[in-house]
Structures are given as structure tokens and as C-alpha cells.
Image (cartoon, rainbow, N blue to C red; front, top):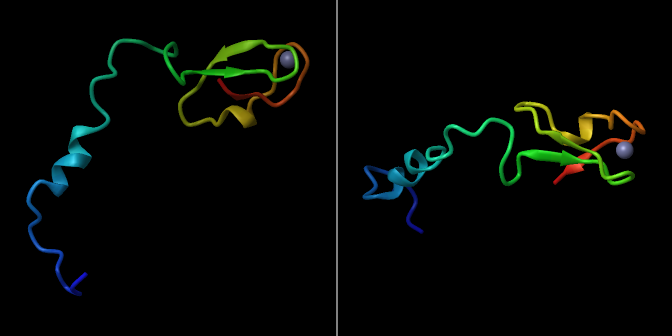
Length: 67
Ligand SMILES: [Zn+2]
């Protein structure tokens, strides 16, 4: 890689803007949108901004994991 070569890339910047779209409508439900309790299997919709492991299972209190 040549140092300093970071100018106007062709097509590289488009990858970023291409993501983050296309998942509109569904709220909470969907692939990766749930937290699951590893102990009892209780599921909860994943809250944005809150990692599953910071959420305790409402049934048994075990920290949940990403479904
Ligand atoms: Zn549980």
C-alpha cells in the first residue's frame, strides 16, 4: 500500500452508504432482533442501544444473550 493514497476513492465510499438501509418497518422482531435467555429460553425483543447481556431475563434474572 502506498502511503498517502486515500484520495477520492472510486466506489469505496459507496459501501458505507449502502448499508443501514432496507430494514424498515419491522420493530423489534426479525433476525438478530431478539435476546434470549440461555437459562430458561425466555425471549425478548432486543432494544436498540442496549446489549442483550445487559438485560436480565424477566423470569429468572439471568443475563440474556443475542438470539
Ligand atoms: Zn430466564
